Amino acid sequence: MKYAKKWISIDDQVDLLTRGKGLGCNNVDGLKRSLETIGYYRLSAYWFPYKTSSGDGKTVFREGTTFDEIMRTYEFDRRLRLLMFEAVARIEVFLRSRLAYFAAKEDGAFGYPDSARTKLSREYSAAKKSEQYIKHFANTYGDEHDLPPYWMMVECATMGTLELLFSKVSPSTRTAVASDLGVKVPVFKNWLSVLRVTRNACCHHSRVWNREWGVCPKIPNAWSWSGVANGRTFAVLSVIYHLLARISDAAEPWRGELEGLFEDFRDIGLDKVGVPSGWRDMTPWSRSE
Image (cartoon, rainbow, N blue to C red; front, side, top):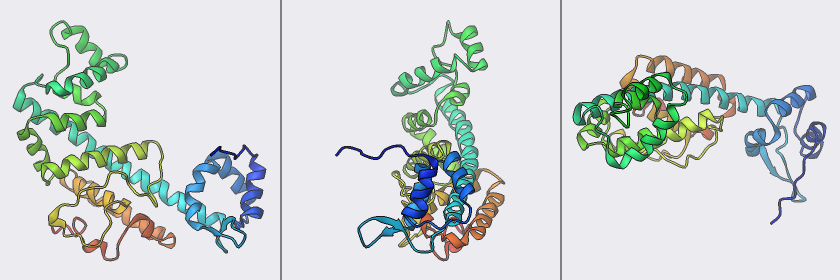
């Protein structure tokens, strides 16, 4: 099928949304600014759940839906994404530190798995163009070493490379890292994928509200979840909170901000995030694990 939609001006977008599709709006200038600064297509992900089919088969907004309601949904998503990224950043830094520590202890400073060397070499070459500490190592020790030691390499590796490295290092190293974080190796291996996808979603300003995650977290048996979907954002938040609580005193302040956000935006409903009733009594939120 050929894509037939064409470019239309901001004024025509406003007219389409309000007159054509029935979006309530008492602030046309604000709607115009949002269309200019955020974009029609990005905003459409937030108003999609508020739409329905009209009698003639066209897609329109449900009666009573307003521009302010759409923007509150957008703002909730933006703030939730920032909270998630802050926590993932702390977890990522911890992972880099502990993976390098245990791997170098077990296999030596340069004891990289052969199956990871090709990807590590590409990232090392890229880092030499911009990172001063990598340039210094290459200029000083490059005649003897094709890669820097673990504690340098992990600082310039992408999350994807860290995920690969974790899967290839010795079983004892994987166990040591996972044990630090209070889970078994298979669970943390999955969680690394979840963290990578979450990090990318946050970095690219992708929607976390009303999202079905392509990589779903494995839920530890000890959590005893029942009837709770692990493909929604609540499951990702639960993983983040568990990990943050294992590594940082920031876990409780972070949780406080999250609960405050939920309270401030309770009018938009938390079902689109997958938050179940009684979630505070569930592991890891109950801290009874």
